[in-house]
Amino acid sequence: MSGGTTPRKTWHVADEHLRAYDRGELAPPLLWSTDTHLAGCAACRARLAALTDPVALEEGWARLDAELDAPRPGPLEALLLRCGVADHTARLLAATPVLRRSWLIALTAVLVMTVAVSDTLRSADSPVLFLALAPLLPLAGVALAYGPALDPAYETAVVAPLHGFRLVLLRTVAVLATGLGINGLATLALPGYGLRALAWLLPALALTATGLALTPRLGPVLAPALTGGAWTALLLVARATRHGDTPLPQFTAAGQGTAAAVAVLATVLLFRLRDRFDLTTPRTPHPGQRHGGPS
Image (tube, one colour):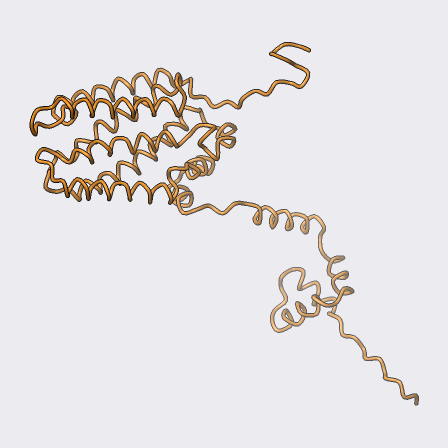
Protein backbone atom coordinates (compact mmCIF):
# COMPACT_ATOMS: atom_id res chain seq x y z
CA MET A 1 0.00 0.00 0.00
CA SER A 2 1.45 3.36 -0.95
CA GLY A 3 2.24 5.96 1.62
CA GLY A 4 -0.17 8.48 0.11
CA THR A 5 -3.29 9.63 1.93
CA THR A 6 -6.63 8.10 1.07
CA PRO A 7 -9.06 10.77 -0.26
CA ARG A 8 -11.89 11.35 2.16
CA LYS A 9 -15.43 10.95 0.84
CA THR A 10 -17.25 14.30 0.79
CA TRP A 11 -20.72 14.50 2.32
CA HIS A 12 -23.51 16.21 0.36
CA VAL A 13 -27.06 17.01 1.24
CA ALA A 14 -29.51 14.31 0.24
CA ASP A 15 -32.03 15.10 -2.49
CA GLU A 16 -35.05 14.75 -0.21
CA HIS A 17 -33.45 17.12 2.30
CA LEU A 18 -32.75 19.66 -0.43
CA ARG A 19 -36.36 19.49 -1.59
CA ALA A 20 -37.60 19.96 1.99
CA TYR A 21 -35.16 22.86 2.40
CA ASP A 22 -36.48 24.47 -0.80
CA ARG A 23 -40.07 24.17 0.47
CA GLY A 24 -39.10 25.60 3.88
CA GLU A 25 -40.05 22.33 5.59
CA LEU A 26 -36.63 21.14 6.79
CA ALA A 27 -36.49 21.11 10.58
CA PRO A 28 -33.47 21.51 12.88
CA PRO A 29 -30.90 20.12 13.33
CA LEU A 30 -30.84 19.11 9.65
CA LEU A 31 -31.72 22.69 8.72
CA TRP A 32 -28.64 24.02 10.50
CA SER A 33 -26.38 21.39 8.93
CA THR A 34 -27.77 22.11 5.47
CA ASP A 35 -27.32 25.89 5.89
CA THR A 36 -23.72 25.42 6.92
CA HIS A 37 -23.00 22.97 4.10
CA LEU A 38 -24.59 25.11 1.38
CA ALA A 39 -22.43 28.08 2.38
CA GLY A 40 -19.32 26.15 1.33
CA CYS A 41 -20.51 23.70 -1.33
CA ALA A 42 -21.05 25.04 -4.82
CA ALA A 43 -22.26 21.65 -6.08
CA CYS A 44 -25.14 21.50 -3.60
CA ARG A 45 -26.03 25.13 -4.27
CA ALA A 46 -26.27 24.27 -7.96
CA ARG A 47 -28.52 21.28 -7.16
CA LEU A 48 -30.71 23.53 -4.99
CA ALA A 49 -30.97 26.11 -7.77
CA ALA A 50 -32.13 23.38 -10.17
CA LEU A 51 -34.94 22.49 -7.77
CA THR A 52 -36.11 26.10 -7.31
CA ASP A 53 -38.85 27.62 -9.47
CA PRO A 54 -37.10 30.46 -11.37
CA VAL A 55 -40.25 32.59 -11.41
CA ALA A 56 -40.67 32.32 -7.64
CA LEU A 57 -36.97 33.05 -7.19
CA GLU A 58 -37.20 36.23 -9.30
CA GLU A 59 -40.28 37.34 -7.40
CA GLY A 60 -38.47 36.77 -4.12
CA TRP A 61 -35.49 38.85 -5.23
CA ALA A 62 -37.83 41.59 -6.44
CA ARG A 63 -39.59 41.71 -3.07
CA LEU A 64 -36.23 41.83 -1.29
CA ASP A 65 -34.98 44.66 -3.52
CA ALA A 66 -38.18 46.64 -2.97
CA GLU A 67 -37.93 46.17 0.79
CA LEU A 68 -34.28 47.25 0.87
CA ASP A 69 -34.82 50.26 -1.39
CA ALA A 70 -37.99 51.51 0.29
CA PRO A 71 -37.29 54.47 2.60
CA ARG A 72 -38.12 53.88 6.23
CA PRO A 73 -40.90 56.18 7.48
CA GLY A 74 -39.90 58.52 10.27
CA PRO A 75 -41.86 58.96 13.51
CA LEU A 76 -44.16 61.66 12.09
CA GLU A 77 -44.88 59.74 8.89
CA ALA A 78 -45.51 56.54 10.84
CA LEU A 79 -47.93 58.38 13.13
CA LEU A 80 -49.81 59.82 10.14
CA LEU A 81 -50.05 56.38 8.54
CA ARG A 82 -51.46 54.92 11.75
CA CYS A 83 -54.07 57.70 11.76
CA GLY A 84 -55.29 56.59 8.32
CA VAL A 85 -53.56 59.26 6.20
CA ALA A 86 -52.76 58.10 2.65
CA ASP A 87 -49.12 57.12 2.20
CA HIS A 88 -48.34 59.80 -0.42
CA THR A 89 -50.01 62.48 1.71
CA ALA A 90 -48.14 61.33 4.81
CA ARG A 91 -44.85 61.44 2.90
CA LEU A 92 -45.47 65.01 1.69
CA LEU A 93 -46.48 66.17 5.16
CA ALA A 94 -43.53 64.47 6.83
CA ALA A 95 -41.18 66.17 4.36
CA THR A 96 -42.35 69.62 5.50
CA PRO A 97 -39.11 71.35 6.62
CA VAL A 98 -40.66 73.16 9.60
CA LEU A 99 -42.02 69.95 11.11
CA ARG A 100 -38.53 68.62 11.62
CA ARG A 101 -36.81 68.43 14.97
CA SER A 102 -34.37 71.32 14.34
CA TRP A 103 -37.16 73.80 13.58
CA LEU A 104 -39.29 72.68 16.51
CA ILE A 105 -36.35 72.98 18.90
CA ALA A 106 -35.53 76.45 17.56
CA LEU A 107 -39.17 77.53 17.84
CA THR A 108 -39.39 76.28 21.40
CA ALA A 109 -36.14 78.01 22.35
CA VAL A 110 -37.30 81.35 20.93
CA LEU A 111 -40.60 81.14 22.80
CA VAL A 112 -38.92 80.14 26.07
CA MET A 113 -36.56 83.12 25.86
CA THR A 114 -39.40 85.47 24.93
CA VAL A 115 -41.54 84.26 27.82
CA ALA A 116 -38.59 84.65 30.19
CA VAL A 117 -37.96 88.23 29.02
CA SER A 118 -41.66 89.12 29.20
CA ASP A 119 -41.93 87.68 32.69
CA THR A 120 -38.81 89.58 33.79
CA LEU A 121 -39.97 92.93 32.38
CA ARG A 122 -43.43 92.48 33.92
CA SER A 123 -45.20 95.09 31.80
CA ALA A 124 -48.23 96.47 33.58
CA ASP A 125 -50.62 95.94 30.68
CA SER A 126 -49.49 92.79 28.87
CA PRO A 127 -46.40 90.79 27.79
CA VAL A 128 -45.89 92.97 24.71
CA LEU A 129 -42.76 91.20 23.43
CA PHE A 130 -44.41 87.77 23.58
CA LEU A 131 -47.65 89.01 21.97
CA ALA A 132 -45.68 90.71 19.19
CA LEU A 133 -43.52 87.68 18.38
CA ALA A 134 -45.99 84.81 18.80
CA PRO A 135 -48.12 85.66 15.70
CA LEU A 136 -45.00 85.81 13.51
CA LEU A 137 -43.84 82.27 14.26
CA PRO A 138 -46.81 80.44 12.62
CA LEU A 139 -46.51 82.83 9.65
CA ALA A 140 -42.82 81.99 9.27
CA GLY A 141 -43.57 78.28 9.60
CA VAL A 142 -46.20 78.36 6.85
CA ALA A 143 -43.86 80.42 4.64
CA LEU A 144 -41.19 77.72 4.96
CA ALA A 145 -43.61 74.83 4.37
CA TYR A 146 -43.78 74.90 0.58
CA GLY A 147 -42.31 76.39 -2.58
CA PRO A 148 -39.54 75.29 -4.98
CA ALA A 149 -36.84 77.23 -3.14
CA LEU A 150 -37.73 75.98 0.33
CA ASP A 151 -39.34 72.55 0.04
CA PRO A 152 -36.90 69.61 -0.34
CA ALA A 153 -39.79 67.45 -1.57
CA TYR A 154 -41.04 69.98 -4.13
CA GLU A 155 -40.48 67.69 -7.12
CA THR A 156 -42.43 64.95 -5.35
CA ALA A 157 -45.22 67.42 -4.60
CA VAL A 158 -45.40 68.40 -8.27
CA VAL A 159 -46.22 64.87 -9.38
CA ALA A 160 -48.29 63.91 -6.34
CA PRO A 161 -52.00 63.16 -6.95
CA LEU A 162 -52.98 66.29 -5.03
CA HIS A 163 -54.43 69.62 -6.05
CA GLY A 164 -51.83 72.30 -5.28
CA PHE A 165 -54.24 74.20 -3.04
CA ARG A 166 -55.02 71.05 -1.08
CA LEU A 167 -51.33 70.43 -0.45
CA VAL A 168 -50.88 74.02 0.74
CA LEU A 169 -53.85 73.63 3.09
CA LEU A 170 -52.64 70.29 4.42
CA ARG A 171 -49.22 71.66 5.25
CA THR A 172 -50.67 74.90 6.60
CA VAL A 173 -52.97 73.03 8.97
CA ALA A 174 -50.10 70.78 10.10
CA VAL A 175 -47.76 73.72 10.69
CA LEU A 176 -50.45 75.82 12.37
CA ALA A 177 -51.46 72.99 14.67
CA THR A 178 -47.84 72.52 15.71
CA GLY A 179 -47.00 76.21 16.01
CA LEU A 180 -50.18 77.21 17.78
CA GLY A 181 -49.82 74.25 20.13
CA ILE A 182 -46.30 75.32 21.14
CA ASN A 183 -47.48 78.94 21.46
CA GLY A 184 -50.31 77.76 23.68
CA LEU A 185 -47.92 75.89 25.95
CA ALA A 186 -45.75 79.01 26.16
CA THR A 187 -48.81 81.04 27.11
CA LEU A 188 -49.32 78.81 30.15
CA ALA A 189 -46.01 80.12 31.47
CA LEU A 190 -47.58 83.58 31.82
CA PRO A 191 -50.49 82.87 34.18
CA GLY A 192 -50.38 86.32 35.76
CA TYR A 193 -51.84 87.95 32.64
CA GLY A 194 -54.86 85.69 32.34
CA LEU A 195 -56.69 85.82 29.01
CA ARG A 196 -54.62 88.80 27.89
CA ALA A 197 -51.76 86.38 27.21
CA LEU A 198 -53.92 84.76 24.49
CA ALA A 199 -54.21 88.00 22.50
CA TRP A 200 -51.69 86.60 19.98
CA LEU A 201 -54.08 83.95 18.63
CA LEU A 202 -56.33 86.04 16.33
CA PRO A 203 -53.41 88.09 14.95
CA ALA A 204 -51.58 84.82 14.21
CA LEU A 205 -54.52 83.52 12.20
CA ALA A 206 -54.90 86.87 10.42
CA LEU A 207 -51.22 87.08 9.48
CA THR A 208 -51.10 83.48 8.25
CA ALA A 209 -54.27 83.83 6.15
CA THR A 210 -53.07 87.15 4.70
CA GLY A 211 -49.66 85.75 3.81
CA LEU A 212 -51.26 82.78 2.05
CA ALA A 213 -53.76 84.98 0.19
CA LEU A 214 -50.93 87.17 -1.14
CA THR A 215 -48.76 84.23 -2.15
CA PRO A 216 -50.22 83.65 -5.67
CA ARG A 217 -49.31 87.22 -6.62
CA LEU A 218 -46.15 87.87 -4.60
CA GLY A 219 -44.66 84.41 -4.16
CA PRO A 220 -44.11 82.14 -1.12
CA VAL A 221 -41.23 84.23 0.25
CA LEU A 222 -42.16 87.86 -0.44
CA ALA A 223 -45.81 87.56 0.64
CA PRO A 224 -45.17 86.41 4.22
CA ALA A 225 -42.15 88.70 4.50
CA LEU A 226 -44.25 91.76 3.64
CA THR A 227 -47.06 90.59 5.90
CA GLY A 228 -44.70 90.11 8.84
CA GLY A 229 -43.04 93.44 8.10
CA ALA A 230 -46.38 95.24 8.08
CA TRP A 231 -47.29 93.67 11.44
CA THR A 232 -43.97 94.75 12.94
CA ALA A 233 -44.34 98.29 11.57
CA LEU A 234 -47.85 98.60 13.02
CA LEU A 235 -46.61 97.49 16.42
CA LEU A 236 -43.71 99.96 16.37
CA VAL A 237 -46.00 102.85 15.40
CA ALA A 238 -48.54 101.89 18.07
CA ARG A 239 -45.79 101.60 20.68
CA ALA A 240 -44.36 105.02 19.76
CA THR A 241 -47.72 106.81 19.82
CA ARG A 242 -49.39 105.24 22.85
CA HIS A 243 -49.81 107.20 26.06
CA GLY A 244 -48.71 105.82 29.40
CA ASP A 245 -49.30 102.15 30.07
CA THR A 246 -52.38 101.77 27.89
CA PRO A 247 -52.48 98.48 25.94
CA LEU A 248 -51.40 98.49 22.32
CA PRO A 249 -54.43 98.81 19.99
CA GLN A 250 -53.69 95.40 18.43
CA PHE A 251 -54.34 93.69 21.77
CA THR A 252 -57.51 95.51 22.76
CA ALA A 253 -61.04 94.25 22.05
CA ALA A 254 -61.22 96.46 18.95
CA GLY A 255 -57.87 95.20 17.72
CA GLN A 256 -58.88 91.60 18.25
CA GLY A 257 -62.10 92.17 16.33
CA THR A 258 -60.12 93.72 13.49
CA ALA A 259 -57.76 90.73 13.43
CA ALA A 260 -60.71 88.35 13.26
CA ALA A 261 -62.24 90.32 10.37
CA VAL A 262 -58.92 90.33 8.49
CA ALA A 263 -58.59 86.58 9.01
CA VAL A 264 -62.07 85.96 7.59
CA LEU A 265 -61.57 88.26 4.58
CA ALA A 266 -58.15 86.77 3.82
CA THR A 267 -59.58 83.25 4.04
CA VAL A 268 -62.35 84.14 1.58
CA LEU A 269 -59.77 85.64 -0.81
CA LEU A 270 -57.57 82.58 -0.40
CA PHE A 271 -60.44 80.29 -1.34
CA ARG A 272 -61.19 82.37 -4.43
CA LEU A 273 -57.54 82.14 -5.53
CA ARG A 274 -57.25 78.40 -4.85
CA ASP A 275 -56.70 77.45 -8.51
CA ARG A 276 -53.52 79.56 -8.60
CA PHE A 277 -51.80 77.21 -6.17
CA ASP A 278 -51.43 74.38 -8.67
CA LEU A 279 -47.81 73.27 -8.57
CA THR A 280 -46.04 73.19 -11.92
CA THR A 281 -42.45 72.57 -12.86
CA PRO A 282 -40.62 75.35 -14.69
CA ARG A 283 -40.44 74.80 -18.39
CA THR A 284 -36.99 74.41 -19.89
CA PRO A 285 -36.62 75.68 -23.47
CA HIS A 286 -35.55 73.24 -26.13
CA PRO A 287 -31.89 73.60 -27.10
CA GLY A 288 -33.00 74.46 -30.62
CA GLN A 289 -35.20 77.31 -29.42
CA ARG A 290 -34.20 80.83 -28.49
CA HIS A 291 -36.38 83.45 -26.86
CA GLY A 292 -39.41 81.19 -27.13
CA GLY A 293 -39.26 80.93 -30.92
CA PRO A 294 -37.85 78.45 -33.39
CA SER A 295 -34.23 78.62 -34.30
